[in-house]
Image (cartoon, rainbow, N blue to C red; front, side, top):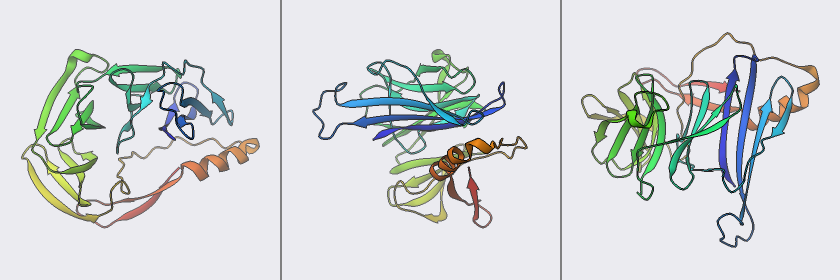
Length: 248
């Protein structure tokens, strides 16, 4: 099963929502692109305390590309790297519950991987394999506003992890080492962290005083959500010690 997961806040309804995109392949597959898979899109509304199924055309709905850091919350919408005849960024607006697609700059048949970050408050696409290209969308939603901001020499990247202070890119090498690359000086340094491929992730978060509503009759649903979506992350500052915390 492939797919994507998103979590966001609906500021109009004062509500938290999950969106779950599942691409389920039949066993054994018959290798017919639209006949061997079943797509489902479900939305969990915390105020209501239940899942709802999103209606869509299965053959038309994009396929999510699962890469490390392939998803990001930006401007009240969740974004995933996806494919729909060409490579796109799939967006889900938490308030309107509307999906939309934005084309990005990389060729449909290149061998690159993709990650999404925020650079200078702009949605940014990292295309990596050998050379790493960093594209920034200067005007959100406008294809013509994509500009190539940086090109990084080959670093044998397993995956980008996070972008700090608009210039410090933390990434994991194919050997498992976590490294920092200063985009302004192209200086590369090792960070005192090591992990096997696809088992390590960093997340930037902001503290918020917005309460998560608790509804007595949805305890069972909330327990399921906590069990499925609560993760423990190790956040390590470059100068400091690891801090363990929970994200629900």
